[in-house]
Image 1 (cartoon, one colour):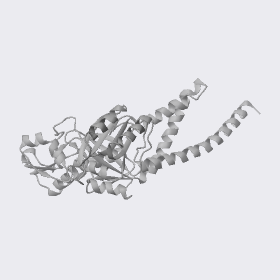
Image 2 (tube, helix red, strand yellow):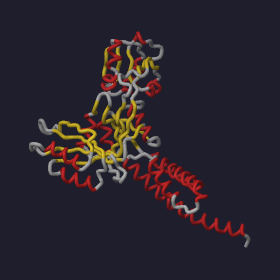
Image 3 (spheres, one colour):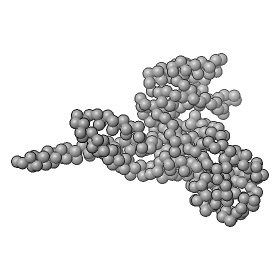
Image 4 (cartoon, helix red, strand yellow):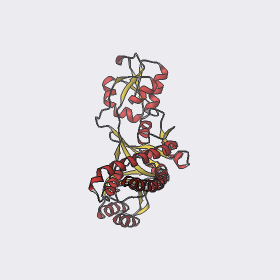
Length: 362
């Protein structure tokens, strides 16, 4: 047998083993995709990919092959992600509003392979996940200019879903009108109350009357359907394109750093990881003097930093409140477990609804 024949025999043997291992790997990839679909996690996980490449490349003893093996690993990851995208093509993502609304835009950015499903309001979108009609819901929890979205926080407290990711999206508001309209013809602007608030200075400057709509995309749809030149909508560039409107003015929101934080809600909780650095929890405190102060102290004593603490009425008793808290630290660590156990002594209700590595931007 020649050296060439020996080499080819080795390659054939290795290729046979690799085919078997490839099938096993892709079976595992299917499980990963199912896990992500159930918990509303995106396909891309760049930190995990780089960690895996670094770890596996270090297994090589022959330095000459390392760069080639890194390319091989990246190709394998790309193939795996393509299968995940195909599997997640059947995923259904609930959002509040109509096509072209900011929530719709964000949902499609986070889950580009999924079907975005419109719902009339936040509650309907949330309930669609609870009852199994949709896999996840993408809902706003806070705007940098107008503050908390209280109705969504209430759903999080009283509902059963988990938050498996938080995404920050820049919100750019534009003045949208029927084609052929000039700015001096516009007398009234229509939009969601938050959008009207974000653009209050611009609206006051031009002396516009305001009319509230369910959301910005509905406003754009109404203006397009009216054909009138005396009304305009405030909304996204995508809504303008969707409904055939033109932008009379761009970026009219008062703050140049206007952004909204969206949470992904799912029925299943993401498995906490050692790399998690953020958490969200909801609690009520015992009706005893100092309970809230002591609860906050317990959180700090165990090395966790509260980034936000918001109170909301429970609506069950007069002057009874629950608290929404976001913090830095790994809630699944030993310190986290101990902290949660101690909090039970001061809290009448306590639930962790989210643990994730970091907040992402879309």
